[in-house]
Image (tube, rainbow, N blue to C red):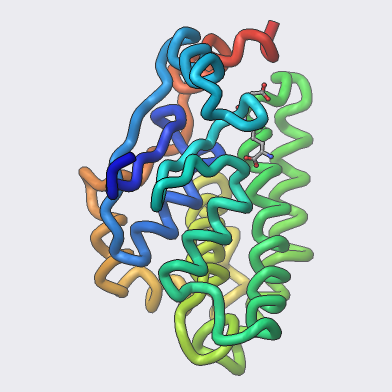
Length: 223
Ligand SMILES: N[C@@H](CCC(=O)N[C@@H](CS)C(=O)NCC(=O)O)C(=O)O
């Protein structure tokens, strides 16, 4: 297996987008293989590289890693985005999991039946405003970074989710000035600024074509 980092997923955000964000924030190059047809998924399964028959899959350091959290943990540990000790790491995990609760709701809203969509979106907005953002607004009032005195994966995940929330609810940060200031500071970091430019590996918000591809590739789920 080569030294290259290779990401196997759909050509869209889904569960891989946070991995792309983390690698990009660390300034690490990676390649991508996109699943566009059912056969692409079947080949990976038949080759035995998907431990649980699920993507994301990331080839890194001679390993074929699956399970998004395991991938994120490894990337964060390898590129010094996981705190200086176990206590910092526990704090980073708490913030990251809080973000992931809302991120998962956003990801799965894609396949929510149309009649439930409105309610689901309103749940996401409410959860973001009532639970998620107040925690970070409070924390960022007294600290530049979420944990310790340097960038961690928690900061990167927070930036990602707040940008996603703004795409869906443009005024969502209006009562959260510290989170807004944090966003601006994060966006100015050279690696992140580069990732936010057109032409980077960052994926656009999902559209119908993306949903169609996912449903075709995973036709055993979306019957
Ligand atoms: N716990 C896994 C879940 C991964 C997952 O659900 N992947 C979907 C695509 S986003 C998949 O490959 N599903 C196929 C299946 O479950 O059969 C993770 O977080 O990586």
